[in-house]
Amino acid sequence: MVSGYNNAPNLLMFLWINPHVDLNAAQEKQTLADLQSVLDWHRQTQLPLYADWLKAMQKLAPEDITPEQVCSLAQSITDSLDPLIEQFEEPLTRLSLTLTNAQLQTLKKKYQEDLKDYRKEWKLDASAEAQLDAQTDKGLANAERFYGRMSPPQKKLLRQLAQNSGYEAERTYAERERQQRESLAMHTRIVQSRPSAEEARVWVRQWLQSSLHSADPDYAAYLKKRKRSNCEASAQLHNTTTPEQRARAVKVLKGYEDDVRTLMRKKS
Picture (tube, rainbow, N blue to C red):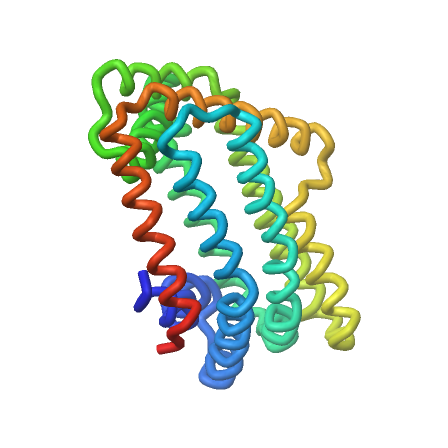
């Protein structure tokens, strides 16, 4: 975790930005510098929040919990995303102002590949049962990361929780598609009109905000309902765990907290 965090600008460049846009040398140099600045800000302002959240989770883990407790913590985490998004406004604006039409075509192609991968990962073109299997498998992997091996009754509960979650695969896919479409439109508008940096930043800010907070009231309501359902499911599953599973969760969370506090002190 420590080495991955400290190398985040290079990892983000290698795993996401270059595959999506294929930067030239000048763009790559500037973007890496911008990402390092965001990382420095994140280390100073966000990691202390993460450490506090992890400590709060450790206090909750040994006892039964309520959906309200889960939602309160989840909302704190969600609230931290707005200032994080703001940090990417200037770097993304600077990059967008240097993009070429060829790079936009690369981005469009990669977005299409991403959507295909998403459909495959979540089994969207398979049966409803296969889609439920995919949801259940992901829930199981997340649960066992903290609690260790789940018992057969807990696995059965996870499947039932996934079935009752209200997750609408095609609706979620359509939102991802919308975000990609608006991203391409925003970048294309900047490339074609070459606005001032300030004007371009307004467009970037609008797109980032629409990605984080959907302008579609129906989709926003769907997300709100899903978040509540997730809080209830997390509490319900946790309340079935054994003292040994809870002790393991505390140990895992403490390990994460220790890593975060190390990162707060260490820059390389």
